[in-house]
Image (cartoon, rainbow over all chains, first blue to last red; front, side):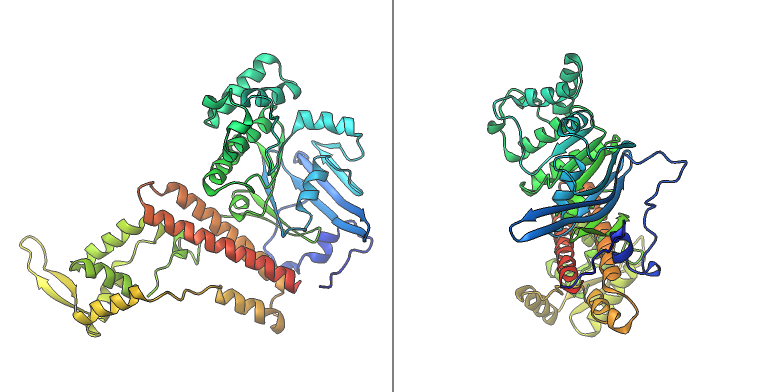
Length: 281
Length: 168
């Protein structure tokens, strides 16, 4: 495979990999107009180079993206395309090699780890493939502590915990410890915990990667419901079904964005989607 | 829809509207409501080829209805159909032709073809997810049909990714 590398361009993904304009339907507007509020999250020319024994690995190569307030954006791409690294950079879990990250109109790259941690506690929720719950704490405490750490007082934390667990159908398991729950239930708790401090942005990496289809559906329903209530979500996934719920899907390939487009419920030649199920014979 | 109609008639004789209603009942929203004209046209063709026969049944309060039933040849055809493994197309031929020939002809480039197709599949997936949510729990056949279509789309998307990896 030969690939064209960006020279010194700030926006290699846009300029080198976008196909000729006339072949694409117009994509979303990358530069919010002056009358529009700044995006909730924005990266400019974001790069990440890992130094390995085999030499430098360019995992993320000049990514410009944005997530608007309340928007649900999915990032897809083959394994090794840099999706997870990108999410880690955007959440400050790993320092970027270059480029800028703007969160809520404020520059966030270059913050110290302590400042990033504070920012995350207040503004960002995370859900990963493996639930990362505190194993010695009850389900209720897992959720409540997250709210407290995020700045809620005790009463608010308890209310949010009750609300979220009820929402997730887990009220009966509030006093269980994570190991007593199924994988699907643990992941639902992980989502509750991530939402407990009312983050403005939920970052999630393959939240359904480890689940069977019923639990996948439950977690996806949950994400969609919170999005309906205004939660902004950036979802990294290989699961097309998960991605198809998003307002917009970004496709990452070899560390660069190769597509960025709104998802429109499709019809097949003017007929409903049901016509994919064409009877033959 | 020749063979599905033969299969319905293998159960019992029926007229056109009954066949339409049974198709709808079986597949629910997962299958676009069949056009009655198309059903009658198919039945006429089946009759010409000797797979079904029909007779008019007199109704007192309405126009006569034409009831269709399988002939022995029709039964044989539908049983043979049921016993054969099915050769469904496994790739979207039309898209594959575009991908193979478009860039060569200078009328399209691979990346925009793949991107556009991916968007289309994602949109279809989304529509199907909604269809799945709306399908009543009781309509198992309809739900399975939707699941099948979604799994096919996921495979199509995986394959697009493969194309992207190989061609770009």
